[in-house]
Length: 261
Image: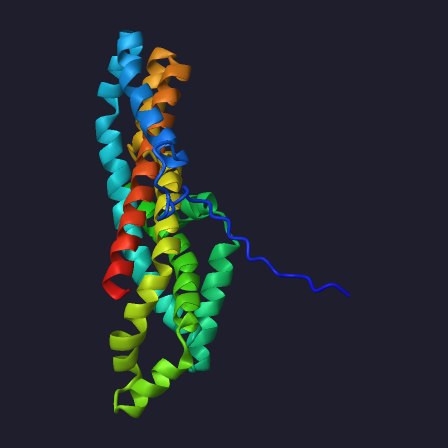
């Protein structure tokens, strides 16, 4: 009977991180990124009204999008680290709590979490819009990052921990000095993909009246009725941002590989 070879298939909801070996001038990333930049630059010349007004209307929305995204990714990274450590903890209570958190949060859509934190919990505690947005995205993406940290830590050979303990280190010291630095090299690409996915999902905070990029686009379109033109610009800006950060993650990965290579 013929042997069946198993192939690992990886699919991400983030933008494609460019491969290290891509040297061609016309890579998919370059075509997409520079094509989007060129189109966004040409539109105001092709049709000054309304594209010039749209582009002038959006910058503060871009800043709000960055604010929500960066705050959420920092807090989600911290939550994910502790969740991942909890998932591999030998203390049953901690392990069970971390596992329940991951399973529950991953089973609830982010949009529902945003509504729940801002509107449902608003009867008990008044949460500012930006705080509610960052909190919901932190809780949601913290669960996904927890699984990334867990998988990254478990990918390190067990002999490394045993060797560190044999040298007189405590488990905490071994994790901090030996295991986690190696884990970061492994998990950087999936963490980068989560960052890019979070950047795109930040558009959902517009339902809380946070003046992000999408919210500003909706405000302009509702006043002028230039829906096609406005959402074309919004889509191009999101595409440029996600492709830019995918390249940034790729460069960080290459630099980390050279440092530890």
